[in-house]
Length: 415
Ligand SMILES: [Zn+2]
Image (cartoon, rainbow, N blue to C red; front, side):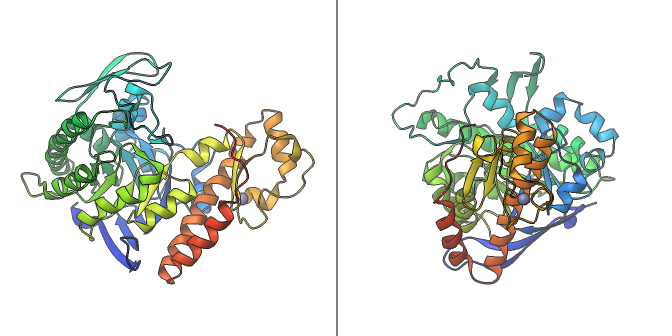
């Protein structure tokens, strides 16, 4: 099996921006881009059957290397025939490197910080109430399991070994996650370390691809860090694109990672895409809010993943074109209309707001299933409509129309 099993074709380009439609081909099938990749952290999208994920238009799923390494163990997934077979998901799969989970344990911060962080930089700061569970050194990261406190170590080679065993079609290089709290000096040091780790990932990936040549080809994406600094983001993009394994292996695509402030999202994606070759796909890690999706796509992101649509669904938060609302509130007790009468999902076709409200109040697990189906479908459908608008030349008009509605949004619940 070889790299020729993985390809990316650019479709329609957006005028004046890096955004485009396209098609990623993997050994487990194609992904029309832009595409939202739902997250099944532990090899399952919580509360929803894989068949249902297929029915609502999911083209691929992303699982987490960190979680599957701890439980059941990547060797078990390997023995089962890889992630896709193990979880009975017939389509393409992604795994992240484990770095984000391991290192966010370290500080307890979320990826996208809504607040301004200027002036509060400190390399030792950690989120209130969190204990530092991870330590970074030149060779890798030592951390404690969130399950049982046991000690583990990830290095670029370990992450590649785990991800090759998991067998996803698209994997990510092991990188160091910094936060906006880190100083500029630390960001520079960290970026260099991430570059050295990226080289080690490429070398190990090349070796494992040869050793495991009986398995379908797995593509490897390099991860671009550099926080909110233009020079660092551009340098990271150029540096990683120039890297080659000893046998000439290069990254198949790129992940745009790291901490960033919401209002800088488009600018940062744009800096990276200015430097990256058009012929390779770009994945934005960890976004799904509609306003973020439009900005990321316009500036050049082809795929993105996020746990939010399913996570907030389990807390009764529902997405509709007008915004996000909480089905738990009393005003829905006798509301016998669907969540959204313009939505084509199973939940909206068959159930009322009053029924979903009742399920949450009664703490019935079907609440999580039905609301997750709707929220995942909402996000997939939004991105499908964005893709169609790019192909038909109506992206700007669709963006204006959608965000006009969205910004008159129903007040979002805290989660
Ligand atoms: Zn629906």
